[in-house]
Length: 279
Image (cartoon, rainbow, N blue to C red; front, side, top):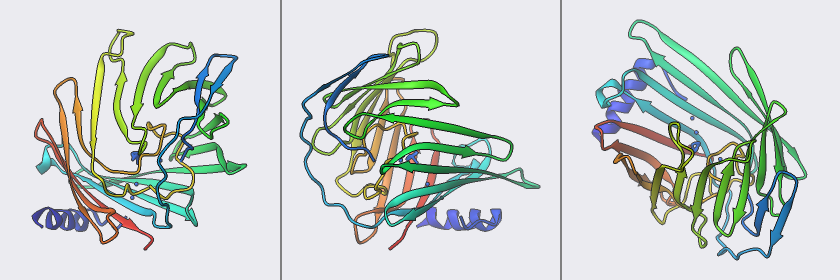
C-alpha cells in the first residue's frame, strides 16, 4: 500500500487526474490462417485452430503510469492514457504526458484516431501539438494486418506462418520475428536486430498469468501495436537476452482484470500503473 500512497502524493504534486498500450503498450485481429506475403503475392494455407474464449463488455478506459526519480528514472513524469469507445469498439484515445521540471510541469498530448471500413481499422491519424501523421493498413482474409503504410510509404510487412510472424521492412529485409501461443494468442518470444547487424540478435521471452488482459474484450485490435495477435492474459515477466529482466506484480479486481501494477527492472528502476474500467 506504500506504493499507492506514493502514487497519490505524486499525482497531487503534478495536479493530475488522468491513461493506456500497449499495451501499447499496450492495442483485435482474427487468428486464423497461414499467409506468406511477398511484395506482390499473398499465398494462403488452411487456418490453424484457436481455442475459443468468452468475450464480454468490460474494457479499460484509463491507464496512469508514474515514472519517479525515487524509482530510478532521470525525470519525474506521468503518462495518462484515456480511451473512448462505442460499445467495445475503440474510437480514439489520447496520451497526456506530464513532465515535472521541479519548477514547472510541461503537458504533452498525443491523440490517436481510428477510421473504420468494413469493421476494420483501415487508417489512423496520430496528432501531437506540432504534427499529424497518417497511417493506412492492409489486411489478409483473416483480418490480420499484412502492411503498415505511413504517409503513403510501406513501413512494415507481416508474414504469418502458423503462430510465427515475420516482420519485414519495405525492402523485404527481415527485421523482427514473433512466436505466439496457439491456445491463447499470448506472445511467447520476440526477436529483432539491434545495431549494424542484420541478424535477429536480441531475444525477449514473455511469461503470462491466467487472468484477463485489460483490452481482451476490445472489438478491433490497435494496428500500430507491436503485438500482431491479441493475447488474452497479462505479461508478468519479460527476460531480455541482454540480461535485463522486468517483473510485474499485479493486483486484480473482482473480475480478474488488473487494476494496479508495480513493475520492477533488474537494473533497479520501477514504475507504478493504475487502471480504470467502464464497469
